[in-house]
Length: 310
Ligand code: BDR
Ligand code: CA
Image 1 (cartoon, rainbow, N blue to C red):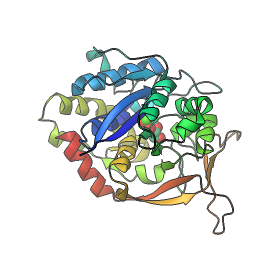
Image 2 (tube, rainbow, N blue to C red; image 1 turned 60 degrees about the horizontal axis):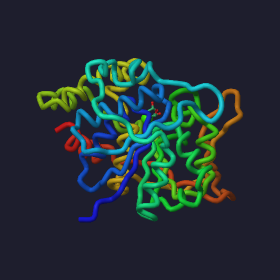
Image 3 (cartoon, protein in one colour; image 1 turned 90 degrees about the vertical axis):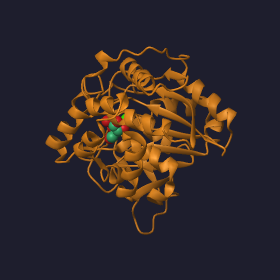
């Protein structure tokens, strides 16, 4: 079987870590590289966390490149309250990475991967879109040769998670999100509308934690974020935002997609980072993304549990 080449762009917090594990435990994929970006935690911490996850998985040598340390404009925002001050529930001090990162040039690593697989590479972005915006600025033609760009981000018909209307990845770099959504790429958007439908419960994690080192690591990194989700979202576990983006790459039939004209607000005092979708019945604007609007949550959860927790 010909493997599907993929590339990940991450800001490794807890759900990014689970997304990386799902991608590496999916035999359908060959992971060509990972770029990291400032988001849930600083760039340096996101990069170290990514390398640690690869260590824990005993993954083959996969190039990991550190990208943007700050958004295109303005100061970085982080999400230590959700993911723990180190992004992985405070457990990384026990797991310093043993492998090294690759080249400095994250956009270059991504563009090279697309050139190796023109029209074939799936790029899955689960972080603020700064690295992607920089790659688009450098070489928009090559970026248009992606097979699909799957972005976890935005909130279309549901409230935001960092503000009343804004989702973290878009709010952390609204200008970059606007560049990516306006670039005419073959884009699939995986917004909170579907990711907040998929909850990994403590019970599922506990049931599997008699397993080996990976299961123990997963139990440790998920404990604090599950407590946060319980307190702030009333959820019995944690949302699998980023893993669902990998799930959509594995099996698009897990979701129903709707072509929509979506852009991102960059100016509003209360709305910067808001995904603005034209939902008018007679929308006159051309679609910019296929937006996931429904998900078969149980089917995805089943796939996730089998591949990641056992
Ligand atoms: C997104 O924000 C981050 O905190 C998560 O890793 C996910 O990518 C959800 O809004
Ligand atoms: Ca993320």
